[in-house]
Image (cartoon, rainbow, N blue to C red; front, side, top):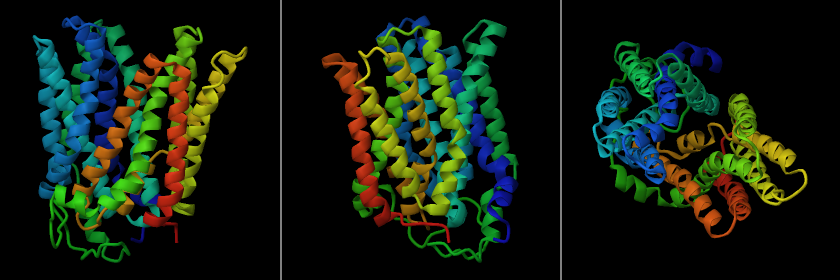
Length: 420
């Protein structure tokens, strides 16, 4: 391509990043209120948490079917169908007479979220030149983070204006309608980039012909055969990626619990967590720059070392005289580490996926990483109940340090890309 990286990203930003931003904005507005609505439908606290977890479970279960759909019908149609199905989930959440119907609707939205994420991941794996793949995928991750960051503030404004939690669900519905219209009526970046990429040097040869629907391949081997064919990289680099996802997910659970356990009030905890999140968000593009210029390991290893060491160090500060100061400090360290890891899982998945038909592999890859994120909060809860929060935090730190060693071992083997 003759355009530089930033020029191409600006050209296709509305169609590449717009659907992700709209979906994440609506989802971010709804997520904080799912437990509240569940309680209004008769759930107790434990059951409301289970209903909220249905979103994560739906996304976990949706990755492999989404990989199959993208491989068969293409990214654009997959996102359109997912958007329409998510609208059905929105209707179910609004009119749900029973808690089970509400939970099923939340699960359906999780399935659709998996389809949106995988469709754009697959597109960028195949159509974005490797020279700035990491930056483009870090922007994709940053777009999702922006939506999830702004969404709760939108929810707060809607609650102040209407006084009804269902207003946020209506807002999500409006975002979904706009997403589907953008996907169906906007220019298709897959087709346009395919026509311009005949001269790209990528792993898979590109004929330069316009593509509509799924990316053409010489052979489609299916999701489960793809999993078996790439079992080595999934069992090695994939497990390292799952450890990163676990540490990220644990951060969202440990920090609020730690603040409560050392006696801070809600506003102080929110301030510390908010500052950590702001640092995280501010660094998302820097991660892509580092990966494209110096290689994937230069972002993955520092990120894991910072988060692993941060959790381990935090675990020793609970009963100290300066516990609040240490909490704020290590929350910031974890924010830096998480920010430096932005886009790493997307980029590594794109690097090791088969370039002619990436969707089935990416379905397996995302299932593995999402599983790591889903297991971590359960691990924190179990260890805290059996022993202490400090021990649970230390174990998460040990997982992070072990993951750093795995990245050090396997990233150069499977993803040795640096900018040429």
